[in-house]
Length: 513
Image (cartoon, rainbow, N blue to C red; front, side, top):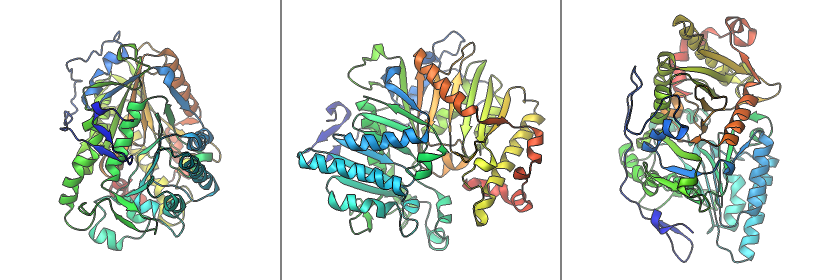
C-alpha cells in the first residue's frame, strides 16, 4: 500500500487515485568551457562520491539505500530467468515497460508465468495488478505481435491487467499515412525498459524478446526491497500509460478516457499540453531536491548508495536525463576516468563537444562493431545501418586525432562471436580510485534520438559501498573484455567499408538513429 505522504490513496476496488502536487521544474544548465561550481558541490579529489555528485538532487529525488540491495546481472539468461521467476511469485504488482514483447516460445513462457500467478492470486481473493507499457508502432507490427501475445491474459483478467501502447505525437500527417510499417518507427518510440515486481525494481536497456534473453548483450541492475523506488517507477509508467492507447480484449485500441487528447489527430500542441502534467506525476510525488528512504529497513543516515531516476521525454519538456548527463560530462573532478558504452554510438552535438573539449576526464568508449550491430546483414536499406555507425565513429575518431586528444579518449568496438551488442551506460571512477562510484544504467544511448525522439529512463547510482563499487567494476570489465581498440587500420577492414550512398546521406539519416 502506498504512503499517503507521497500522494497515493487506494479505493476499495484497488484502483489508484493520484493526487498531483505542484511540479518543480529542473534547473537548466548550459555546458561551459570551465566546469561550474554549485552550492553543495565538492569536486575536490578527496571528496566523497555523495559530495561530488550531490547536485544530481536538483534533477531527481534521491532514493537512499544500502549497496547490498543492488544486484548486477551479467547475462541475458540471468535477465530472462529473473523475469520468469518474479512473474511466478509477485504478490501485489507486476509492472513491465519495454519497446516491445517478442512472439517466440520464451516470451510465451514468460506470459504463461504471469497468467499462472494471476490464477493463483485470483483464487486466493488477493488484490493485484499487472501493468504493461509498450510502444504502439513496434508492438503492433506484423500479424502476430506484442498485442496478440498479451490478449489471452487481458481477456481473462481485464480488471486487473492493463496494457498501454504509447504513440508518439510526432507520428502524424503524411508520416502517419504514407510511411510504411517499421520505417515509421524512426519518428519516435517508447524506449524505457523497467520491471517492477512488488518492491523490487529492475532497470535495463533490454527488450522483452528472445534475442535479449539469449545472445544480445545488455545491462541489468536489480534493486531489491525498495518500495518507494518501486512506487516511483509504477507512477512513471502509469503517467505515460494515461496518455497512451489502451488495448482492449477485442484487440482494438482506445484512449485512456473519453476526454483524453489524441496523440496524432487534432492539434499536436493540445495533446502535448494535456500530457505534460500526467507524465510528470512521478516527479510531483517524489520531488527533486528531496531524499527518500527506499525502504523501511534503511534510515536515511545509514544509506551508502543513492539512486536518482532520470527521464527524458523532450516532447513533454522533460529533459532531466539530458541535463544531468551534460553536467556529469562537464563537472567531474580532474583525473576522473569515464567508461561510456552505447549500442548505437551517435553522440549529440552537446555530448560530443563536452567529451572533446572538457579535458579534466579521460574516456574509454565502447561501441558495437559492425558485426555486433543488430542490423548487420539485414535486408534492404536496414543493411546499411552498421555502415552509418562506422561513418559516425570515423568522424569522431578523426576529431579526437585532429584535436590531439587520443591520449585521453580511446575508442573500442565490441565483438563476440554470434552475439550482438546493445549495452549502454556510463561508469565514473574518481582519481586515485580503482573502482567506479557512479554509474548510469537504463535505456538511453547518448544519441540524437535518445535525447530528442524517444521516451527514455535510466538511473544514476552513486555509491560509497566498497563491495558494490567492486561489482560495478567487474560488470564494466566483463563488457570491455570483448572490446577491441579502434585504430586507423580498423577502418580499412572489409566490414568497415562505408558505401558512397551512406557517405552522402549519413549526416541527415543519423538524426533518426
